Image 1: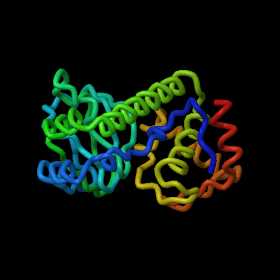
Image 2 (image 1 turned 180 degrees about the vertical axis):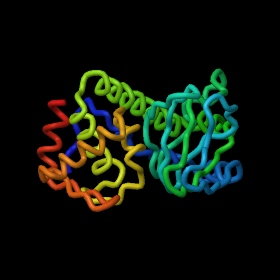
Image 3 (image 1 turned 45 degrees about the vertical axis):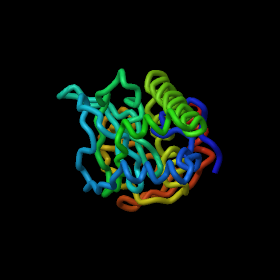
Length: 231
């Protein structure tokens, strides 16, 4: 599969986390001594917007959504799949509160790393710190592109973006079982559930995708990519 278009409503950056590979054996032992693995059930809140940050969280397995909320409305910023972080935006001592909430889309396992221990590793290991900065930079670019598309792309372009994101970056194949409801898919694309259901049916009828319950297969990848690029 090809890379998706530069400006995409995708919820995940292209950067792959390899920061732990840069730690020495002693630093890995230190990491293990200052972290625990926690299991979260589907629908369980992982962190709450405004909550105090005591840990940086690394997704060992699972899938979560990161979102902003004001009590009435919510806005999905990104999806966090395996081998990605939650809480990196609060590693600075000047930002000790979560700026967003996160919820498990499916049963997930997360390594909670004590935030001061994480900061210690960053102060000791340049390559580790550089990788964390690269992750933060890539995540920022992804969010900028996402909101650009929310502003300028039409509904079909946004849905095409999300389908490519799921196929290319999250599941890494063209056929997958979608763990999200139509309402959750609508949240990702910034549209109403009714609009998403209608457009999925149109994509299915036109032979762009094949749907069977929660199973989705991207049939005509090239045409979906064209829709994504033209918006």
